[in-house]
Length: 328
Ligand SMILES: Cc1cc2nc3c(=O)[nH]c(=O)nc-3n(C[C@H](O)[C@H](O)[C@H](O)COP(=O)(O)O)c2cc1C
Image 1: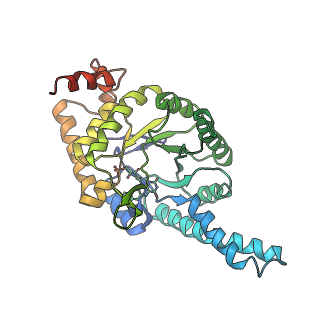
Image 2: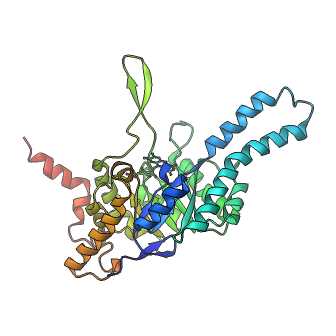
Image 3: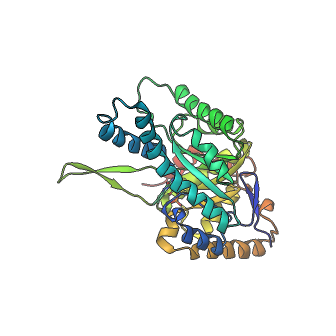
């Protein structure tokens, strides 16, 4: 019974991809993730913001002393950048030394400037690919949706020129025309689209009058949005599709494959239930395939996508109206 599938153009032995998170920043946990049976792993993101912040701190502290010594100033800038990067590069090298599954580096970015030279370092360190975790908050009133979409496209173009590594783009569902955008961006030569990323969410504490972070981890209600968009987007794009956000049961993996995902990304459930979830998901998937008479993922992948599902209207809003109108 084969549960192999495609991810970023690679053949991988399981559709379970462990997404970028704290668990994937540690070599011992990475080894356990592979032993548990994950098909691929995406390392914890290197945050563009984090690098910039590090540099700014040093600029403030050292700028007075170095005002007459531009080379020293440059050295500090390079040095501070190098620390965040060298830790990351070491993680990639260690992961490649110890793992046989694809190891994907991840960069959380909203521009393609400061960090661009580091893509080459990631490549030289042996990463099998790079994931761009992108979300540009549409809060700038001067930017139209076309302007914002163009930013994503420009970044992909620039990164493609900077590396020959396969590129995965991880996006949110906050686009005016998500399907069209997904299709367009898949034509730019990325090898994988990852839906969806997850944001820092803020709540307001009415006692302290402060904003506070909430919902670091996902909950299963989020799965239905992922199922819908997987079913709609999967037939339209020209690259592999990873789906996730809200996967908390082993059945959820099967649902996303049926909706058309090539691979399923998991994170929160690993924090809640441990790495054994990967073992269970692979076993359950195999058993379910056996019961249904499928000998490969290809035989059922996308069977319930919008293009192949006779009842595809279930994924559209009109069905909601029908159901709600019956509830008094
Ligand atoms: C603790 C934690 C840390 C995360 N760190 C990152 C990160 O560094 N980069 C990234 O792209 N996504 C990060 N994510 C988002 C996950 O990769 C994933 O997209 C999201 O959690 C949705 O999947 P889930 O429902 O399986 O949790 C993080 C999520 C969690 C819960």
